Image (cartoon, rainbow, N blue to C red):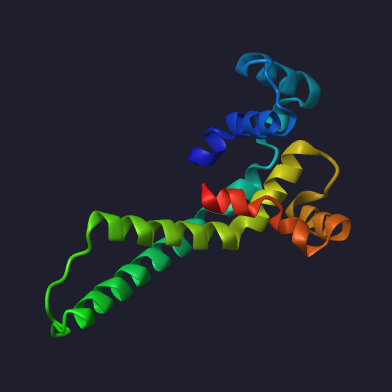
Length: 154
């Protein structure tokens, strides 16, 4: 629901990122409506919504797994029994969270590319599947991962 509510802002943000737009939010929203109608506010929204659950699920699983591994490693390195209580420092949790976020982002990144393509080129692709096929046929599989490294570093 939250992704759909902010979809018009997401569409404008994507357009401004790609085009370097500087018209201002309300002018961009007005232009979008005038050029594409109400439907234009929601271009790329399905792909955006589709990536939410996998992203959060992967991130949660990876974070919990990494925390468990770190706790086990700390116990072993200190020769403590398996049932000894062990906490992670804020830095250790930060590292685990960062790695979990990178894992989640890298696995759903192709959906981010598809969302961007659907937003930037409305009508060019026949939905999410068509955008996937279009990107792969135009740029190869590597096209689904263009720009991933800056995203992972962020």
